[in-house]
Image (cartoon, rainbow, N blue to C red; front, side, top):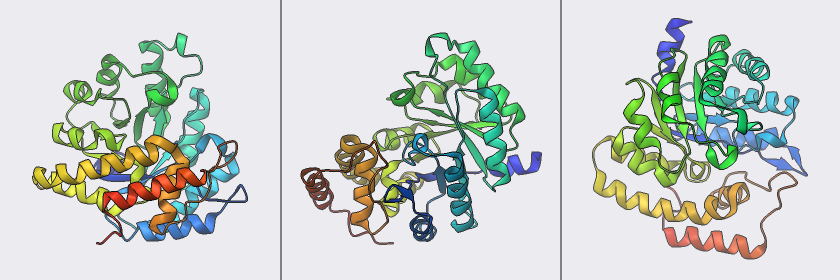
Amino acid sequence: MKERRMMSKAISGIIAPITTPFSDDEVNLEFLKENINKYSQTNLSGYLILGSNGENSCLNDVERHLIIQTIVNAKSSTQKAIVGISSDSTRVSIERTNQAADLGADYVSLLTPYYFKSRLSNEALINYFVDVAEKSKLPVFIYNAPKFTGITLSIKVIEEISMHPNIIGMKDASPGSYMQYIGVCKPDFKIFAGSLDTLFPALILGAVGGVVSLANAFPVQCCRLYDLVLHGDTTEAKGLYMKLLQLNRSVSGSYSVAGVKYSMDIAGYHGGQPRLPLLPLTPDEKASIEKAIKQSKIFPQTN
């Protein structure tokens, strides 16, 4: 186990938070497999499975397991599978993390619990993350997502949990806390930008990659941005970042999962409609996304 965890810590680059395709409100595993087969030909480092873009909260346990299996079986051998297993219950989160291990995942992603947020002190949060990590068969990434949880993890929490050998990194979707987190966490604790909005500055300051929704539709361009920064070409990287930033705000920022899925349809992937009660886009909303993609001049993609 120790050797596997040490090898797993090598992950960096762009991670796509995979969407879940539906047909008549049912999970379409064939469409999902076709998407992953296409992504496996790109430089994506891996996939966040069952995150917010995957509409995890709208899926039952059987669907979750089938989605994990499909992606693990279809991804390339060099790409990693990170599975969202979060629950407000420590016990349930532990059960899910080990189910993910049995299904072939490489890591798990642990969202901050939030339902009883008024009682979730720093101590309670530290205990939650450590308790799950202690029982997990897989290395753990923390998912800091104030937009969904209403909680921004404190510097104290990150400093403390980053010392745990089985808590190896974090997807940080906070508006700008990555600067402080990078300053206090242990050197090998890996911080991934959780939004394209912060990807470029976070990479410059020491983040090792990003988990960005736009990579579902434009993985080549998102990976290109990462490669440019990695090789020190910050001028070209900044130019590409500004294009992607504006596009992201016109897609995910304006229309959330439905917008991401429609941009995937335009780019040749299976996006489709979100699961109810989320509503599909209106014709005007679709036209707005089409216009934003055209104006970005980043499509069609080239390798």
